[in-house]
Image (cartoon, rainbow, N blue to C red; front, side, top):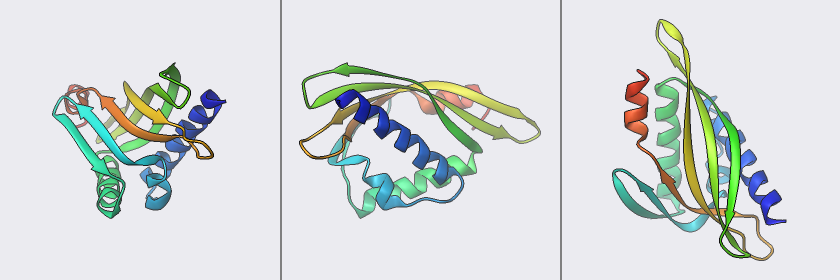
Length: 145
């Protein structure tokens, strides 16, 4: 049961991300994917945050940034779950992002994000953490930034 609900979470995540790329973003709905508090880790370090108005503003800025650099679509190639216990798992999500480039063909870039997910009784699963690779280097290597 947890596996189906976590897969549904990431289908919704993908749908909302793609809507945001078209400029149609409901930040409350996007924020509902996340737990009240969360942790994120990337090569730049580890950060913690709260699911509040400031977070919604950061999400909106992030989506605007993705649109500005030509992000056209996000696709999920695969979701693999590593159970932790009956309420928690690590969701390894393999993404493909498609970018438009000026005077060049679109480019598709594959990358993975590892999400910590919690499913409490009577609630939908929520992301409470994520670990990402070096997005900036990957984008530079492909001529996006």
